[in-house]
Length: 139
Image 1 (tube, rainbow, N blue to C red):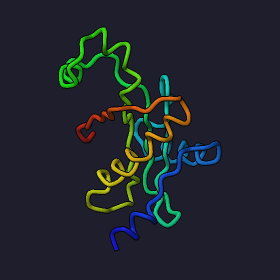
Image 2 (cartoon, one colour):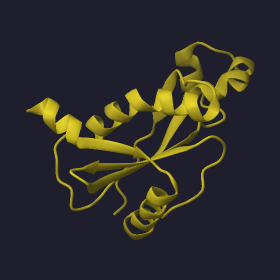
Image 3 (cartoon, helix red, strand yellow):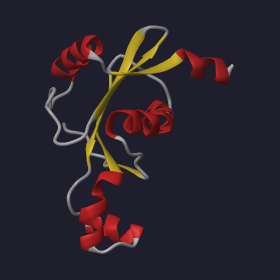
């Protein structure tokens, strides 16, 4: 049953048609609205049985994050020359009417499998690390 649900959960890399849907959803439901991302970017619209569930934006990694660079074990100079191998999950918006336990983790795991190929096809390289930051809820 779980495998069947996974197959019905689809991620669409945004072409021109999907991008207009994604922009509309983000402008209506995301308090930060739709914003262009710097550098290389990939955007996804996640659907279940053709119903939109979530929007994801991936873009260039933050220039310098000392704890990340220390964890990876690279110097500032190495980090600058290889930064494009780190992709940043800039936004993950799960639409407010969607209620499903662990959905964010499930979506990130599915997109993580797909984004390597999409990045290779679009930009000619595969990222080796995906970073995401959790923001405290805005009241």
